[in-house]
Image 1 (cartoon, one colour):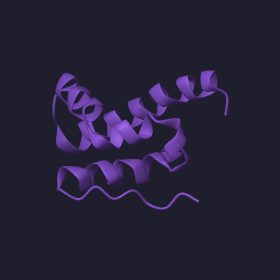
Image 2 (image 1 turned 30 degrees about the vertical axis):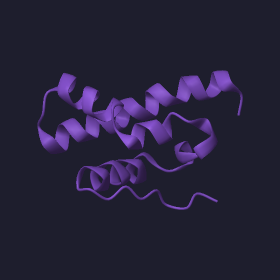
Image 3 (image 1 turned 90 degrees about the horizontal axis):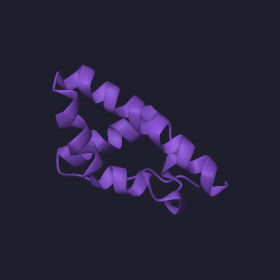
Amino acid sequence: MKKNMFRLLLPMISADIIANIIKKKKCSEDKVILLFLKSQTYQFLSNEKTKMWHLSNYEILKVYENEIKGSFIVPEIF
């Protein structure tokens, strides 16, 4: 994928995941954004080489929720 396309996809994927976290946790948007952007999940997602962006937003959300519980496991992508 071209770098520019990935840069366009990342904010859309992140925004959807953040919106779902806000709905589930009923936390402020600012707090959720900061927590997500500091997470290991986001670090993997923002690295195009990990191909994590191939996962559905639901799967990425599950990875994040497990990370919060202390278990960071990324499903096999290929």
